[in-house]
Image (cartoon, rainbow, N blue to C red; front, top):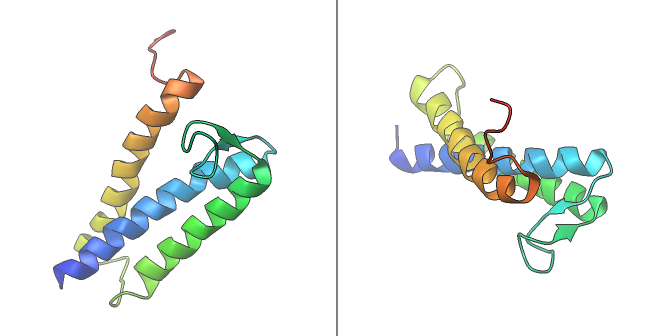
Length: 109
């Protein structure tokens, strides 16, 4: 398998992971951080902005996963690349957004 395909799948997983919190917060009617807020990534954007941003991330993920190469979910290296992208950006997001929402403390554990 071409390593550039695996890189595209990894980035597709990252876009997929990024789209979820924006889209879910948006459909719940809650503001959430986005690159369009002031300051970018720290301020809150409206639910409308976040539904569009989340959807844009889903489109990017779809294009990178489905339209690059010939993605096969049963191929271990391809599925692992998408999964690693989801995990990597998920961990970065958890640490970053945890600063704003109290998710980095171990209270109650």
